[in-house]
Image 1 (cartoon, one colour):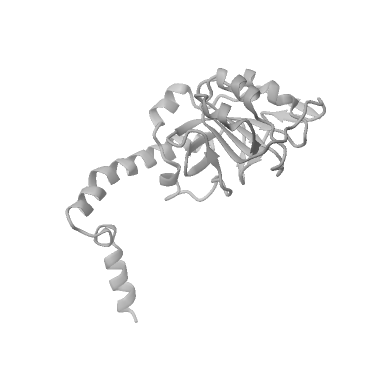
Image 2 (cartoon, helix red, strand yellow):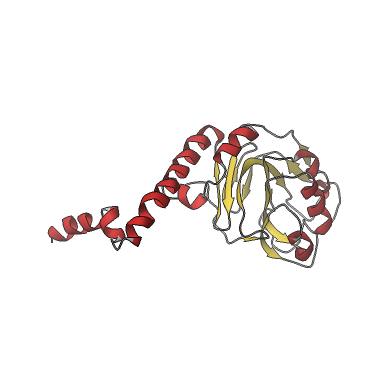
Length: 223
């Protein structure tokens, strides 16, 4: 069965721009859910991404909807692709990637294999992928879903969820929680730049700044 739904606009591009620079690893200090659980490669290692999830489910060898998905993408969108666990057949190669790049999304995160990596690396859009493969999917026209709930790299994703990604991985956040989470992460990143590094550069220790010395004294004092 083929299912095609419209994209879901949650946060505006202006809201996303104000949150750009958020690091998923900083969010990982205070959130525990929505993170990828598998290794990923990325064609643009220096990228730092935030955007709304547009979902694509390719559950078989049928990649018909890969030729349609570019029409659902634009600035502020992150394409999340669910391959249903398959790591052999590549649904994205040079031609599909070029079409997607032409729509100027923020990134593509593919829970599966990619091919034509040299061509894809030349594109402006960062592509995250599990592995490379020389065998591709085909167009049969019998299944696939656009903008339905999926699982991508171990994380549940709903259309319109907010995705924060860089070379360390990604986190998916419900849109109603995303602004607060990203602002908290940005504030922590700012504090680290302004306080942590100067503290250590001055010859002081991380343990003394973080309260670890006090914690150890308390714990070890009980023994």
